[in-house]
Length: 296
Image 1 (tube, rainbow, N blue to C red):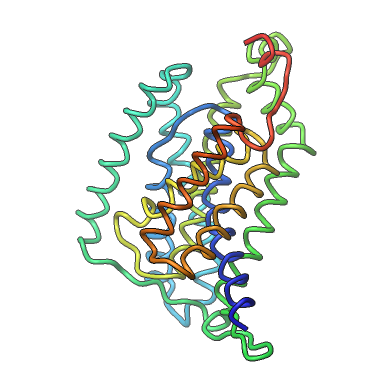
Image 2 (spheres, rainbow, N blue to C red):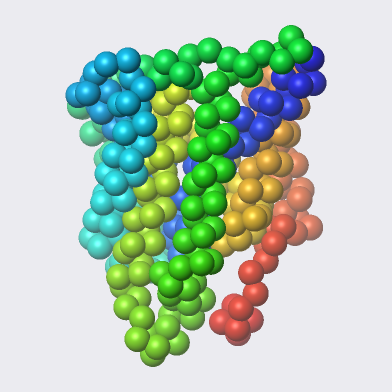
């Protein structure tokens, strides 16, 4: 029984890290932009969920499902604006982009505190997610099962977008060899803007999921962003399958260690495991090889 609960909790935590890391797999993994404000886009998605429920009202089911789309569109637009105003001037300057987006994250956190206050707000979970599934004495919360299902849907969506659409081909071409893509008539600036917007939109969807698990405040995104960055690095920068495996490794390791140690010790041990692993595989589990990378 205890093992089943531990495995389920590990899968649930892995799915949350993966959902947050999906956006980073696009902005950081493919574009090479260290966006320290990614956690604040998660926060915005969570607050959009709260606002949507406040406007629509009712039992929360329709409002919550609608908020997933609204959160994606809101953070997508904000991501496009951020890319056009700031990020586009910082490509190839990773330290500058890190510092600039960190400043943006502080501004967004303060804006959230000014608008919603320092106290957290609570999202009303839909009626169909308020109970759980009991199997053999083990209870699996419906909200966590829903998050796992949502992750699978968005993971498939991103994979199809990247590998089965013309936009995905243009996006991969631009990220692998920008000069050649431009020679082929691809509008790289447009691709950059939309790609960054998609990564930000995925962060907004992650915020909707996290809002089901507890109160929402200005620092809610910061609780997940460090492990999500490590998920992308551990799996291999720019590799979607690697991101999935990285999330599973970190999520299950955290849960299993925490079952025998305190939460703070568990974080330290998981971080140590990742550091040791990267000593032997500094580029992560999977390495994307391309002509442009080989030249570098």
